[in-house]
Length: 116
Image 1 (cartoon, rainbow, N blue to C red):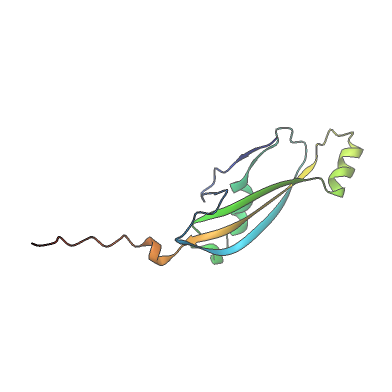
Image 2 (cartoon, rainbow, N blue to C red):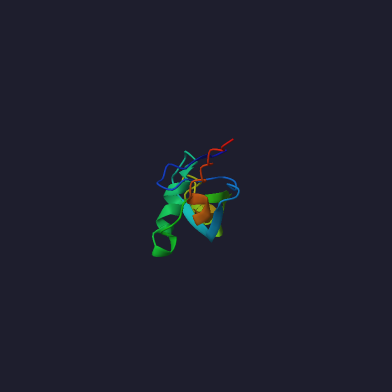
């Protein structure tokens, strides 16, 4: 079991938000954790630094986030050499960077009062 949080400046959604949004890009980031026995990660801390370019300036959120824990050959060797004290594992976090569509940002028009 792992504890997954998202306390960053950009909202993190585990599923699709529905209509009113469009996908800008799909991002995948891998990060190795060594000597971390808590198995807790902050998804925002992993994904948001990769979104620093001007391409993502209009990003509203990260949707369809998927977190996969892997043991790579390098992780395996680190664990063998340190007799598993390193607790090395790699986390792969992927998601869709989305933004609100311009028509979704406009407030709905107010109804005019009907006369008799």
